[in-house]
Image (cartoon, rainbow, N blue to C red; front, side):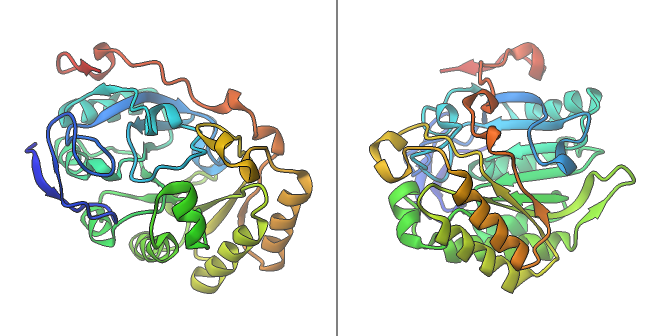
Length: 306
């Protein structure tokens, strides 16, 4: 895995130099994957987590800088352990051995090369799920084709001014729409196994922010117009003001039931299919524990901590 002199794998197109362990670009990450948590995850949508959990690999760093990120500890503070593509492949094996329903790559966009290399070493025998912010390069997604069975992108904003204010993302709406179009093109319609666990398809998450129900409804309009019932839509009410949300008074609180119901009712009106959430999910107890993993889990020798 070589260092990169001019990285352009995400929509920021920094053209920045990335060394092994750190980089000069927007994400500040090097080319070697940094992982914060590996293990069964039971708090995804029911058709993903099922009864045995989703085999989640949480990557450190991110191509967005969401001020309210619930995984702020790893996305902004970069908590985690450096591993090699061989060790990443070993994670897939270990998760499969635990009986999870799928391999769930959480925020892996900035480690594209390492992820592709890990698949050359070992291709999981269970579905691979790509869990994404939605801010993805179509060119990079095309390189993943054939390796990803399920895409789970966010569609965070319809209003690009919100995207710039809260996530430092430019042209987010257009970028996310193009990315989801590519994801749907690759996966086709939703397919389940006999137990109702998704085996293939695209599920789009819409996180409802306080005081921004109109934007969430505009996203739903866009999804209905462009994808009809070829996707599932997951309307999230789990927003908790973490990270630096306290600096933005308009989002420094949880959702009201009235706000959430307004968005859900709009989805019903549009005849969208998917999932809703109990507002009790808006609790920090559902944020994963990102205690650094040990080298014993990954195998293939020692790891590097920072």
